Image (cartoon, rainbow, N blue to C red):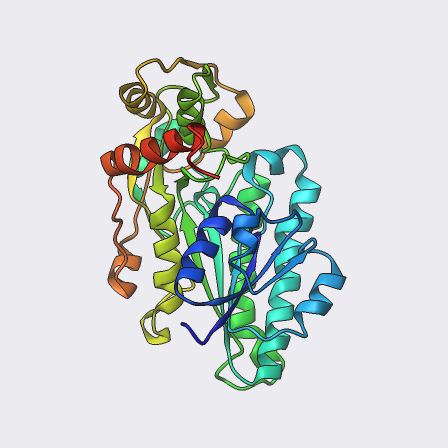
Length: 340
């Protein structure tokens, strides 16, 4: 990977900051974009930083002149925010992704070699019709319950299909070489738990928000019911999954989208973990109807057997390790002034 150049959109986000750190430690040259300025600690790890919206034609004109071998497309409007402004969510999440697929396709043709395009999708693509069905479903596979009930989930599912189209079908309609110019690979992430960045509006963010509030000695009102259960993953595992899939030989990648997961937990179980780590934590439950309705359509568990079989995925962070070794330690350091 050391000779590769990576284009990374949404570099100031929760996944973006951690991925920049991981890639830079591998000696990878990074072209980073975001609509917001990057934190200095992130920007200095990048070869080039371009500020602008992923929907802006001017940004794509610049990107088309660059050389890169992989794309990590992280720029997106998250689930709760998307529900409040579905038109803007569609503009950024779908039209921005379409523009980037087109840009990457043109760069690959100019370079004369395929580009690997990594897309972080979400369990929001699933839509369980009611709580009874959710509890009965068990471990949901990639092809099941693909009836998202949010604009964010619909955006993600459609972008998975757009990536498949550009990877497998667009070249045929355009009479291009059979090798193709884009190698599109997507990961459906569960709720992600980051200790190094502050939560930014995801519907599963009640889990890290509990810990951030407790570490600051602030009370926290959880916006879902105590019995709400969904799958989660520590951010280091999410970054490792992206890198594993990016580096997997093309012959071993048998599908264009994969589930990955680590553990499932209820909101009450997460609150209990938080109280054990921060005995003075003040956590109450005041469900927000909008966000509760969203998580009620997501699976309690997802099946990541395909990722395990095809490219050797497995989580390194159990629930206990996630909370005790990763979250509690790093979040405490943040509010003691030991983290930037």
